Image 1 (tube, one colour):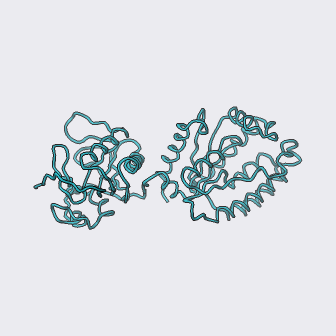
Image 2 (cartoon, rainbow, N blue to C red):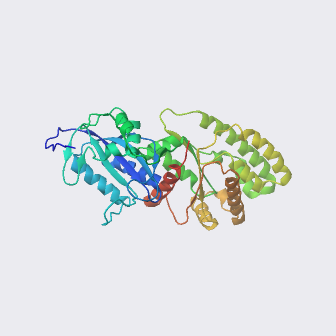
Image 3 (cartoon, helix red, strand yellow):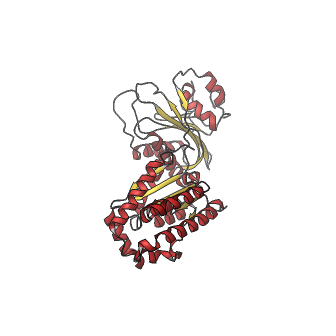
Length: 390
């Protein structure tokens, strides 16, 4: 096979095609992190293929996950290679001295760089192994079926048909995203839940602001029974819970059914099911039996989140947060009440395993004051959401 060494390149952006694979650790998130890094540091990611699972090629190891992507970049081939090697290293790739193929957290290859030919000691474009790898040709055919190999003069579909690779290859249901904003957009509707003082409203606000989400907030402060309830629980529990249920149902159905054309998704600081959780804690048995019948009639009609995030915090930290925000009617909340609420949430989560539930233990994390802690929370959401299948 003959390659031409090119010394001259026209200025401007170029389209390049890359192959990405991983067979160690959280393979899906390794690929997702790599796509994010390419999009942020190298150039716009134009298209992403479906994710394929393939047997290891050339050595015995765990199966790979593979994708192909197309990008627009100003980088020349050697600069592009250096940037991709840097991403591999940053995402945990270790290169060994032994000869032959090795398992890896991440492997990124340059397949094509426009229709140019390039040859050097450490880089050959088009990739010389491209025609022999089904796990590359199949995802490439999803995003560039009619792209012609500039040396062989055959498009991707023809190369795939002629490929002799007999390794196993299976298309998965996973889809990756170009950016976190796109990932949140594809989630469509996220509910951030938690006990009193866990920080759910603050987190929902930050996510909506950072990722262009429509914010749905609970209007609890307008409830006239809430201050009275904390003074006399037995007397005001039932009217409080009934008024909450009516208000939440009306607001929830209104807000979640009206899409904002300028927003990418919805994020709320509550899920309608919290009404039943709090009611079970506060109401007498006969009151709760009546309440539950009415609730389930309403619950059938409301929109369910695609991702349910529960912020778990210890009772001691909850009490500190409640004291810090200074709402008068909350200052006499008893620790036992908060513990029963936590228990109610966990029982709900266990009762709905088919729902996409993510529990985040906050511990000492302060995502309000510390940007690194906030990044930790977002990273946990990303790593859970990447594995969801819609």
